[in-house]
Length: 413
Image (tube, rainbow, N blue to C red):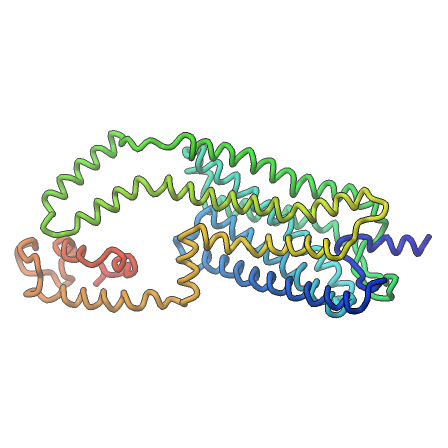
């Protein structure tokens, strides 16, 4: 009875003995394939998620409520890759548990914390997108960065408290092959309520909620497009811009302004559609890649002899690690802002050096009074020591808009 109880501790998908009836060649083949697969996926995922965190933290334009939730998701994915992927590699190479009792408790806790926090982060940014698109008036007060930070803090505290349960449910013991493994303390049947609760709270509920909310979002964005007829306020603004354009045609700057004002009315709708598509892809991949593992754990909880084929379990693990590694790739493919921010991060700020030199050359040419191309526009009288900010504004506007934005302190000069 005692031996059967001990063996039942390790009847879980996370603990598989490679020693058995298989030949050493088959075991070696499994180890090589599993190590290279997991190491490659975890390496790509760790680098990508670290880049997501750095991009949002170091770029002011990227600090939006949605990106705050994506940072939380990236941190959770990092936790899954480090706490689940890397120990799996060492376990395959060493053939035994090498992290001791404290490592067993800590790694199990961080595994489930990362899994549950990622699910809650996906639910949070889905609700945020629903409010921002379907209830834009409420979004002005509810969809803010400070509120997103408070929600993320609450999510991580709640999931951390929930996952402390695993400190009392796992232990290390010796299996049939006389090797240490980190597994269950008691019989596998006692974990059925926990698995059912995990499956309902952190998989079924987020998917059902995301399906309903993205259906409502799609109806607003794609089936009922926002009309482009201008309101009275925008009509008056356009009339004023036309008058300004007639008086400033000789400056050659109004063409770019009219283009920017036109894109200002069209960009929000297209950008919202693009962001929504990207987040929907994240949710769909979350459902597809987590389905094999969640289903296996749930089915094994009801079976007297659980299904523990190591190749299928490797497939389930690879799907889980791929889910945590693929999100930065999706951001890079479907978001122009993330793509540009990633390039800027990889080039370490070299992109800004060349435009600065061009701006300094343009500003130095502006200070020459004889070289001013529009001297008749300047106010009469001697120039002020600072260069006359209001009078020189048309001349400054000839500097390309991309260079003005990259040099925010040019007005001080």
